Amino acid sequence: MTDQQHWVSPIGSTSRSTRRRRASRSPEYRAEQDRLAPYEALARMVIARRIRYGLTQGQLAHRIGTSISAVSRLESGQHRPNVETLEKLGRAFGERFVFGFEDPSGDRELAISR
Image 1 (cartoon, helix red, strand yellow):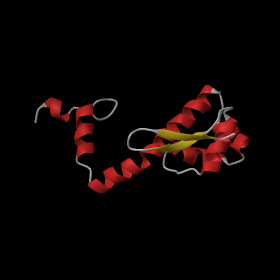
Image 2 (tube, one colour; image 1 turned 135 degrees about the vertical axis):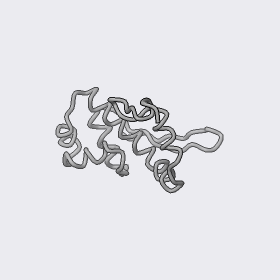
Image 3 (cartoon, rainbow, N blue to C red; image 1 turned 90 degrees about the vertical axis):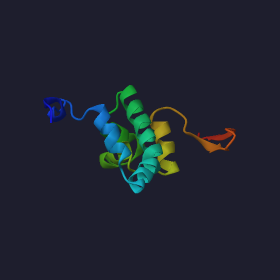
Image 4 (spheres, rainbow, N blue to C red; image 1 turned 45 degrees about the horizontal axis):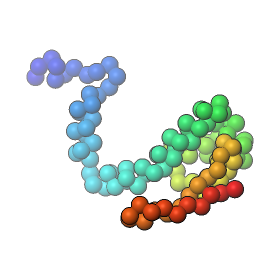
């Protein structure tokens, strides 16, 4: 092996090795990733808003009437929140929670929480 094959980036794996590793994952693993993808996207939105409004997890927890650990679970992207929690988050951020359906053609029908 060459020196380059043994070399590891100081920040971890190279992007090429990461892509190869992800591609070799089992179908079950990929299915679980696909299942969690919407919750991870929601977690990124919650984190971004919490930071935008200058809130700690504790402050957000207080605003929605829950624990810091519950906010942490939500921000982990591994937890499926219920509609009531999403409505509370909207109010905590001074925003409206919007939900709905989209058919295969892309037509959407949305409902807005007050």
